[in-house]
Amino acid sequence: MMNKLFVAVVLCGVLGFSRAYAVDFTLKSPDLGGQLSAAEVYSAGGCNGKNISPRLNWSNPPQNTRSFAVTVYDPDAPTGSGWWHWVMFNIPAATSELKQDAGNLQKMVAPKGSIQSVTDWGKPGFGGACPPKGDKAHRYIFTIYALDVEKLEADEKTLPATVGYLLNSHAISKASLISYYGR
Image 1 (cartoon, rainbow, N blue to C red):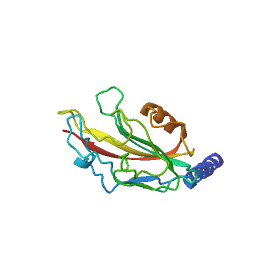
Image 2: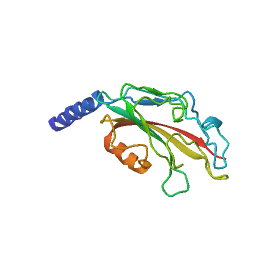
Image 3: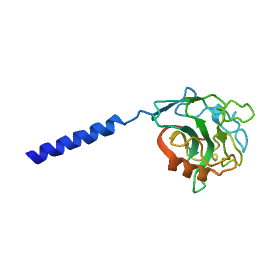
Image 4: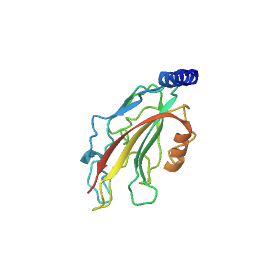
């Protein structure tokens, strides 16, 4: 009986402790639904979209967040390693949203100090969905990372896999949305 009581007390203490530090870090977008719209579809490579990155907003980041990063990744691309559509990092910790078309480098609406590195389209900035015709609908995973560093040691020429490694090395928490697109 005493052993069961001891285990119950320890378990409650551990669960209570982990719950005290649990964070409801959340990513939302008024522009995204279950399916991507023409706005988020690439405007080249045989696709006729508008190539506009969606508005993203997040809430309840961990208290020790020093910066954020955003990625869009298609794990269903027939490459053997997926396809990186957007990689943005060094987003200041005081930021809680990205405006629509923040992925367009010419418009300069991304948060000051943030960096958008090269994607699998071969250039920095947002590159929308453009799966092969007739392929099943692909998943587009939009992820916000809360990071424990103010700046990643990377720049606009850093390859997505390298940035992904750095993100996973410094992630405190992350939240994702998934939308689909096929053609």
